[in-house]
Image (cartoon, rainbow, N blue to C red; front, side, top):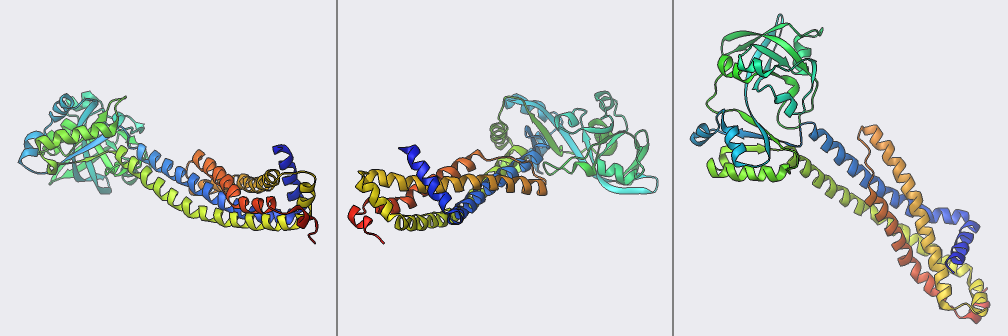
Amino acid sequence: MLFENLKLAFSSMLSNKLRTLLSLLGMMIGVAAVVTILTLGDSASGSITQSIASGGLNTITLYPTSGEATTKEFTDTFGVTLQREVAGLEAVLPINTASAVIRNGHESGSYTVMGVPSTYASLNNYSVGEGAFFTDLDNMNRQQVIVLGSDVADDLFPDGNAIGETVSILYQSKTRSYTVVGVMDAKDAGSTASYDTSVFIPYNTFVQRLRNPRVVTQYLINVADGYDTLEVSDQITAYLDSIVGSDGYRLFSPATLAQMSEEITGTFSSFLAAIAAISLLVGGIGIMNIMLVSVAERTREIGIRKALGASPRVIRGQFLTEAVALTLLGGLFGIVLGTILSVVITHVVGWSLSFSPAGYLVSLGFSMAIGIFFGWYPAMKAAKLNPIDALNWE
């Protein structure tokens, strides 16, 4: 029976091609809009998360603030204490920073100098473009070596070939020379750090030869594999609150930022998809209008079928099947159109394409629901026709 109804439905659609096409347009545009919005939402969220992940989703940055309690707690050895008190920490690196003038011959500029341990680059997913990052031996011996961020290298060495050259760091009227041992690749800032406009020297060199601060500027905390960064961040927060209070520090995690981004993007996409779904209702009204016209045109056919023994349930099923077939066909065309639009738009804006399975399922399910909802009344009207009146219909 279902196969026979589908055959009659497509026969009716093919006999009125233009009317069928116009009926499908409303559903097709609505479904295409929903699919496109949800796919673009997932793609935008994925691209943002990927950008944030370049800063390391398993890293947490701790920024101490001023105060007597912080001076006492946030020392070079605080990382050992934190690893003992909080489970899941692979490493805690102390980092000191200062703004200084760096000069190479006639080229100079003001940049951020960061005193970091030798493992800083590897734990922060930061790759070296030329040369190499300084070693632990360089840190232990307080060597005057320096690694340049990509923008700094471009500014001070516009012709390239920075490796092995010497630059001067001017800080508080004191000038010291440093040998360039590496140039970092460009890196998008996943946190408040501006990697490309910073330079890196060994932590012990910074403390002895540049500045020895009373409080460590910041700590880079690396979360071990198998631990949830957000849960570990909550544990660190609870511990720090107990020793220095909530005003004694600031905590930043790219994972938190990524989660917030996904939630905001998802909510916004769902909101826009709900608005776009209104056009599906408009398309459903168009389907019902066409089905009413179809019932009126085929009144005599309905009368003949009833006279030959067709029950109201059979007649109702015939027209309901036709309505659902129309909406599903429009939904399928809409999915194809929405997918094409999504591919084109993500390519133009430079996002990584991420398809939304939920968008396809919701669109098809909604299309079927609209076919049943708006096809029910015309189908019931056809099923209730009196056979004699239907046969006499002019």
